[in-house]
Image (cartoon, rainbow, N blue to C red; front, side, top):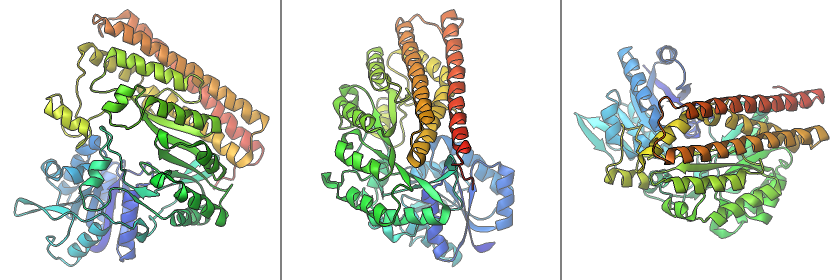
Length: 529
């Protein structure tokens, strides 16, 4: 066994920043660290582990719905002779360590909550063959008994960590590379459906910590110069737009971009709340490279927002959206049309809200069902009411009105490709917007690009109107309580109509993306790297 080698198995569709921060900590301490993408085939992962023969393998169990895939992988690796120490981390591992040990019989330890300091101590103890009992922030089995050590305090100074290790960056659009990064961790809000507060609220220390803006820009400069990166996607749950309700952090951040000569060379996306969107502040941010904002809208009624504990009103949501539209800043959003207390009235009210904000084609209509993630207020309420069903990782619930379950089943099936596939219309729309945003930011708005922007907006408008009209029609059909999913000619016709509209919409958007690429190539604007 190579006692200096550590392997992480994690999702790497985008860079897993949590793993890459730990990679940096361990590398500085002299460990040989490798990351294997969890999406690889099991024999391929096994072969890599046999070659590396690591001291430990860390499994990044972030997403609950992949619990059993991790379970199968661990059992397969053990059965194939891998004897390394198996540890795991992530939200489920941290919040429900006992359940994870029950599910994962091959597991040796769990690193709970923030892992940078804990993983280093764990590796040092394994390397030196010492007892694990002195490490804060872990759970492990000792003589068949589950041991939880005291939780480690959250690191107050995130800038004390080295920059995350990068291993080559992927293209965002038109030859421009992108990177994910954070300006802070945690969130002071406590939305009923979100487990972020539960994750950062259990260990000692402040649940929200923010990096120095100068250090964030220093990392951006490093990525720009060393990796030719020019698109930055901030992963903060709530970007520090309004720290203590003033703009000092943003002012310093923008000034640092100017001091490091990055203005006009980098563009960036953030996540924030609609009530944090300010006309003057975001207008300034756009001048310094802000091109897109993700808003947690979630519901289109005041009653629904109160139930979700959003501490927002519909007026707050609309105001934030309208400011971003007026400034010409791109937008994405979260929206839960279906939730545990959904009724046909609430669905129709929320469809009216979506028609209002998406009726101009600026945004694509998109929605989800609220899921009962562990340790959230929603999960606890549903568990207390006896409404939870399924197994860990796949917990769900039924609606109060039985016919709504049929409507949701039909809608989620018919719009699955449209909303959730990588080549579906919703995702393609976002990429069409991204391609146009990159072109406009770096090269301006010639007439041809303006025409393509209008063409995309028209396509999105048509698709949005179709979705809203279809959903209203389905709501009316299922509300009668007599709409059967079996042998229903009207539903069959609706399904065919959705498929046809989806195919036509995807073709139109793909054509626009191809035209944007061709437009850039003919002007020698793309420099492939």
